[in-house]
Length: 135
Image 1 (cartoon, rainbow, N blue to C red):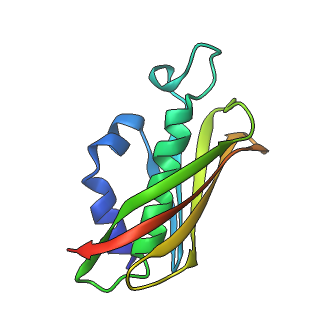
Image 2 (image 1 turned 180 degrees about the horizontal axis):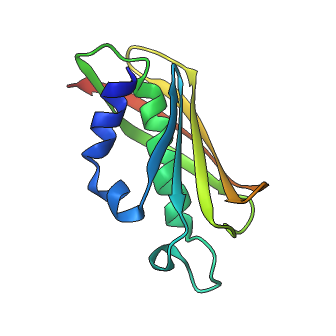
């Protein structure tokens, strides 16, 4: 399962552009980090919300994929984000989790934290629906 997730992730050029990496894979849960690079900041010098959304959506999608058979993939049908605090830190870490697996719909969430050293701040919550599709 982990190899499948990592191979798929390696094909995502957007994640490469953002400098994102998978840090953990478990059944129903995937964590991804991305540095807050100069090119992913907004005018207040913190992470742009698009960075939080991109890695949160991706972590949630891969969490869903951990629960799919080999002949299935997933795509996002809808995703909502609540921005809770500025993304100030060295990097963002998104942890995606499956809330309710299903054959037609998979309900997922992700928490995004800004991290600097031992300090972490919850900056965004995402909730959405993944749809299984043919591989």
